[in-house]
Image (tube, rainbow, N blue to C red):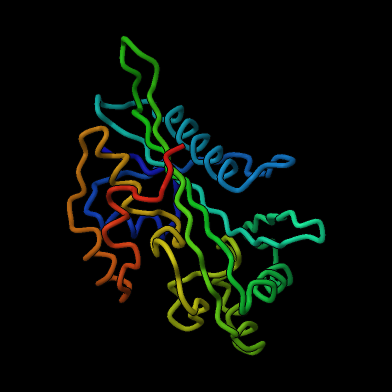
Amino acid sequence: MLILASNSPRRKQLMTLAGWDFAVVPAQIDEAVLPGELPAAYVLRLARAKASAAREKMAVAQDGDLVVAADTAVVDAHTQADGKTRFTILGKPADAAQAEDMLRSLRGRMHQVYTAVAVSPVRADEQAPVKMVSEVSVSDVYMREYSDQELLVYIASGDPMDKAGAYAIQHPGFRPVERLEGCYANVMGLPLCSLARLLALFGVPAQSDIFQACQQAFGILCPITGQALDGTGIAPL
């Protein structure tokens, strides 16, 4: 059995697309960014912490049960006068004003979305400590020049309030993204091909054709076909 350490509707939708049977055990952790922490290190730390927190909540577990955890950050990068790059990690907006600030900042520009996935057995092997594997995926997201009116209508819908960066790539009305380089599911919060590689290490295969399932569900042509499942260009951490 797979245990998803998240109550996110998007992550549950994506797990279902891949055909995995799973239960949900949400993990609550402190998501504050540490001083000087870079985006990849941040999402990786949180995904691993969520996996550990969910594992500790499991009073009853079967041999072979695996925890799946993920963390996603929208990252806005700016080049400073000294030539160094400053990364701003955008979490979920606290209110409508913050959502508006985020969406105005991202409009017409490229930013990146980082998602870390961590997989761990619920029960430790008698001869070894609990093994945890993890990986970070990054997508380049180019936002369109949506109007002020579109922005305000979207905020009024309430949809941005539980989304990192204050938007959902898949929203049918707002459609904020002009183009994407990388994994679409990664921007939604769970890169399925990355997760499939990690689960395969534990002998758990995907139960459906992930490429086909994504493309049919979201009406997209995967821009990284031929790279995603074998991990080309994605470094395990």
